[in-house]
Length: 411
Ligand SMILES: Cc1cc2nc3c(=O)[nH]c(=O)nc-3n(C[C@H](O)[C@H](O)[C@H](O)COP(=O)(O)OP(=O)(O)OC[C@H]3O[C@@H](n4cnc5c(N)ncnc54)[C@H](O)[C@@H]3O)c2cc1C
Image (cartoon, rainbow, N blue to C red; front, side):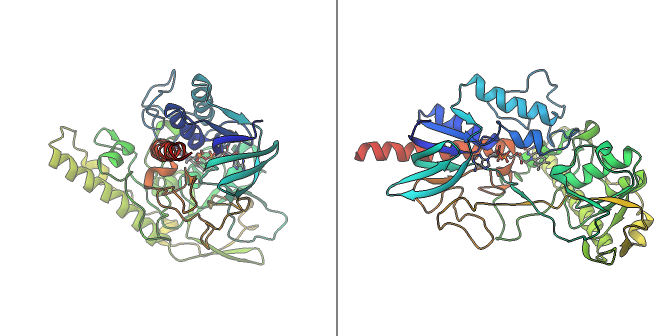
């Protein structure tokens, strides 16, 4: 491996691939190091049946369409990974797979990266190691008879032990896994907290189209600490609105937010009805905003008043279970769909906040030449998603190229 490069990109997921494509367009010499394979997390950190949350016309880079896929279809997770791998090979992007960066530090006016294949120096570094790095499991269940996995370890219903399943967390992952399990004939419990649940389609348009028109993808982060609201959407089964009443109708028992565990009993907050009501409010607010936009723009889209009809609240919401004896309920498996945290322990630079996130402005840190891409809300709501990472990467590549020009002019 070369021992010096202008720009080192760490991580070869979609954000690293996008960064490489933009650096290549601008003629910036660079190298991407990926510890596994390109877009590995799409392959081995996702369940078998996962499809993209957005249709193929949207969940892609603007430069390349999905081959052989209806633009309105939802690409399977392997197709998504293949898409990025093909995108990289078609453009001959300088990506080295199987090389992990184990330490990053400053040395003089350059960076020094220690890798599993030697050291490399660089003037600029782009950290693209993913928005979802370490699984979070918030509650300790000590019962050895219960299998516990994080959603990143779930594969399919057949891979779980026999018995009922408790899914904790009802963002897109938890809601989709619960639906797959109940459709497979499992008894399923689903613990849900505050969430947004936008309509999958409204007035003939997919919600990603509406979020674009309503300017929601470009939203800047709200105040620190309040930016994360779990969003429950699904492209599974052709794509449908994630409606927890409908899931209850399929047989899922809904529960409030999971709390303490003691002597085989898991407690749940008495917040289920509130969480459902707030989710409904979010759903209806998107319809309202869409209607207002359509009226203001004079769009000729078919009206859809039936989208406002909500199913009756199921018994599990009106008479919620606040404590569940897991064994008595026949629960053999708990799936924690409770999100991820960042882990930048390998970066030896004083740029991190107390919560472990890097200090930055739209991906540009206070250390000259150090950038982050692909993080949630890096510059806007879309930043951790495919096309959002593409746009951030384009902007950051421009910053790097300009800096390269300045460095050359001064040398
Ligand atoms: C279940 C799930 C479904 C999702 N569905 C969608 C969707 O449908 N549409 C959408 O737009 N977004 C979706 N996302 C969000 C986002 O697109 C993905 O999380 C995506 O994988 C993020 O891409 P990334 O390149 O930023 O990070 P990652 O895909 O995590 O890539 C980072 C890469 O860096 C490598 N790496 C990490 N550390 C090092 C190191 N020290 N040295 C070298 N390499 C390293 C990793 O191996 C990895 O390949 C989903 C997320 C999840 C969890």
